[in-house]
Image 1 (spheres, rainbow, N blue to C red):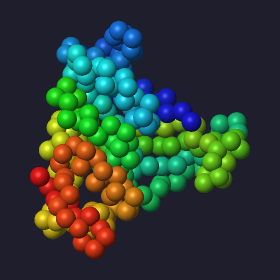
Image 2 (cartoon, rainbow, N blue to C red):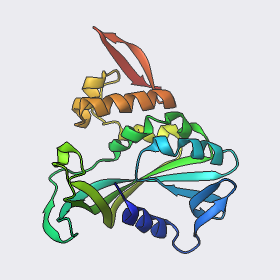
Image 3 (cartoon, rainbow, N blue to C red):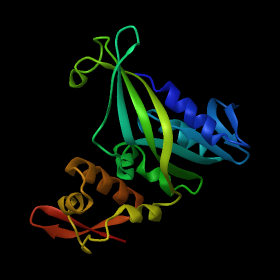
Length: 218
């Protein structure tokens, strides 16, 4: 799978005006350098970049930018890369999807040198009929992703900034299932959200309701 185009587009966007692209800093190559701020674009799993980030934040301010598809168009290509179809996905992305990746390093947001930006993007995803993709995509592979424009940007500079992602309708004490219902999230994503917020120190366990744990904000 490649996301070369999406990564390059975001890199150029965040390097606008004063940024330097692809700068070497010690043992690492950094996507964008803005004087005292390093910007890393991560379109894939955070598990592959957490070690790098932990080292960089020791001596530098670091912003991790993670794109989440807001509206997506699926473009199908034949084996010769000719377009054979294009359709709009009925799903819309949400900021909370970042918790799928944040579970790999939820504590890092507590570091004063680290911040996270979630960019909701409208994009095209190109699938190619090469017979090598997953069975879920009927063996079509993801060939590339291309951003059309940015819908919204959400910056999180400290753990408390994530409180705004909790719905106002939540009771003072709630279970993971109540969070999933009020946020309109799948239960597994709500579980990841609770895990991250607890590790950040935003939530604490306040009791139990039957077998379910109750949580509240600190």
